[in-house]
Picture 1 (spheres, rainbow over the protein chains, first blue to last red):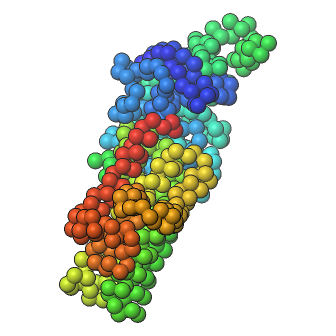
Picture 2: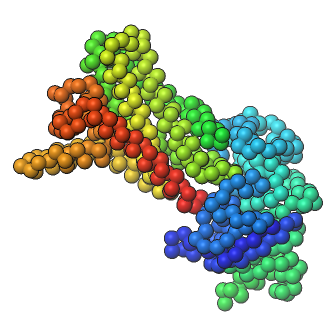
Picture 3: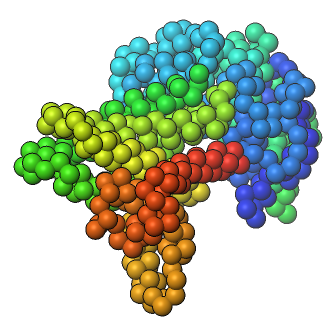
Length: 235
Length: 262
C-alpha cells in the first residue's frame, strides 16, 4: 500500500506537485493519467526516491521512504526512456543489474516472452528503439517484486509484443501485485486498469474506476471523458 | 559490498575506453623517452614533475565531466536500485580516479623499473612524484564530478570544468605573481602560504620540490614553505592539505548528490 500525504515538489519556481494526497491499495492495476507536465513522472520518481520532495510524506506499507534506499529492493521500475550504456551487451547489462540485488530473477522467461534470444550478445547502442524497450521491460520485470512501476510501458512496441506485455501485466495482477502505470494511450489504460488517478495541474483531479469517470462526465469512452475534463478546465 | 561493485563497473567500463589506453601509452612513451634518451634520472624526475602537475589535473577534469555525463543513463538505472546515492557516486568517482591513477603509475613505473632505477634516493623521489600525480587525479576528478552534478547542461558543465582547470593550472600562478610584484613592499609570506594551500597544483609542485630538495627551482612560495616549516614539517603539511583537497570534494559529492533530483 502506498500512502502519500501533502506532497509538494518545486523545480526552482516551477511548482510541479502542489499538495497531493493519494492512497493506493495493494493489489490491482492503477493508471496515473494527466496531460504533459502534470507531474506524473515526478510523482513516480518521488515514490522511487529519485526526486526529493520539498514537503510531504510517502509511505510504503506503513514505513516512510524519504531519504531511504533499502525499500527499493521491493520495487520493479521501468523508466520512460530506455537509455542504456551503449558499449555493453544485453547479457552484460542484465548480469550487472542482477548483481546489484541479491534476489532470484526470472530473466530467461522474459527473454523468451519478448523474443530477445538473438539480441543477447549485441551491444545496446546498436539496438532499435523497440528492442531497447523490450530489454527495458526484461530489466523491470525480472526481480518479481510486489510493486511494479511502469512509466510509458507501451512506447515503441510492436502489436505482438504489446499483446504479450498486456498478458504479462494481467498475470502480475492475478498474482496479487500492485502495478502502477502511466500512459498516454487511453485504449491501453481502459483495457488494463482497475483504477485511474487523474492528475491535473499538480493535484489529483479524480481517483476511481474508469466506469465512474465515464458516468461523471457522461461520455462513452475514456478518451472523451478525459478530453471533457481538460476542456472544462480551459473554459 | 555494493560500493565495490560500483567501483568494479566503472573500472570495467573505463578499461574498454580507448582514451584510457591513449593516456597510459602517453606516459609509457614519456617515461621511456625521458629516461633512456636523457640518462639522468634526477633531471627526468623534474621534467616529469612539470608535466604531471599540469597534465594529471587536465585529464582528471576532462575524464571526470565526460564520464559523469556519459554514464548518466546507467546512473539513473542504478538510482532505482536499492543502493545509497553516496555509494553510487563515490563508487564511480573512485573507479575513475583509480583507473587514471593506474594508467599513470604503470605508464611511468614500467620504464623506471626497466631502466633499473630502483636504488637509493631516486626511487623515493619518483614514488612521491607518482603519489602526487595520484592525488591530483583524485582531486580533479572530484571537483569535475561536483561541477557535472551541479550542471545538467553538458556544454556548460564541460566549460566550467575547463575554466576551473585553466584557473588553477595557469591563471592562478599569473595572478599570484602579479600580486607579489604589486605588493612587494609588504610582507607577503603568510599570504603566499595561504594562496599556495588553496591551489592543489601549486601545493603539489612545492611538495615535490621540497622532496627533491632543489631550492633553486622552488621559487618564492617554495622558499617560504621551507623557511616557515622546514623540509619535514613542510612536507607533512603539504600532504595534509592534499588529503583535505581529496576529502572535501568527496564529501561535497555525497552532499550534493543526496539533495539532487534525477
